[in-house]
Length: 291
Ligand SMILES: [Zn+2]
Image (tube, rainbow, N blue to C red; front, side, top):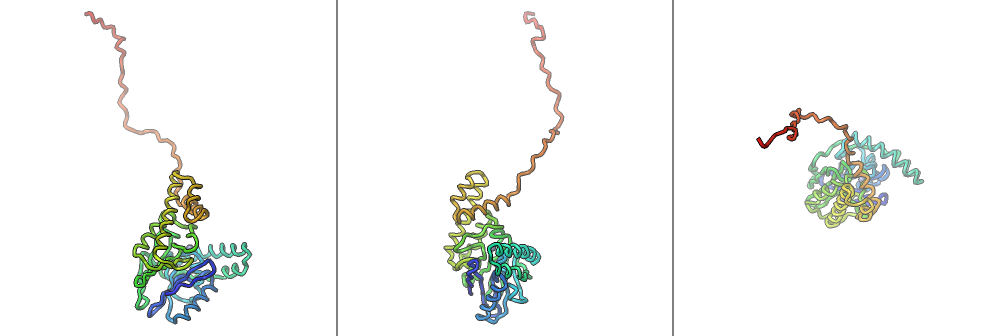
């Protein structure tokens, strides 16, 4: 089992080698990064490979063209990957150009998108020969299509971007309320080593601490939504800094359905009422009590 650390985006890619086959976990930011990764893998093993995408963010799968025809596992389907990949390729190329990194812009714009061809719904066990790994759908968390790779016999969890080491987790397109619960569940088997999508691999207790911070983010978002605290107070108490909190708050607003349109009052259509009781003024009757 290997983790490949990249300077670009402080990214971490994964590799699990079995007796018959190896599993490549994410392929990098562009074709060049993918090619370098594929070359590095070939120095370790000449076994056939399969690829797993931890999610659809471009930096995790734009390097796949270097791996040629292969089985590619993911939670979201191929059509989604092509559509979203197109958008991200254009957006990232434009951003690189704005930042004055023309070479990077050209590299990303040249990316050949390789959509997944095998879907993971729930979980599947993948036998690599002498070692079975579990590809598990996360549910709503860092994205709506996160997948983790568990290596139970070694106690290793490849977590993708649901955990990040050395940088704040990214809430762009995330689900702030559901995310911590998903992480709690994934940590319930107590993996010894957790490999994040960005930053160094770390131990279970590091992951636990980050899960607690994710839960604190959800709590602060919920309290802002209910009016118990102000946005400024949430920003000041954010475990991941102001910018991350701001993104999370915006995301919560975007995910909350707008209040229903006020309806015109509808005339009460109850059962017809009995006629009003007529009350006579007793003084109208001139009753002579003396009689
Ligand atoms: Zn991501």
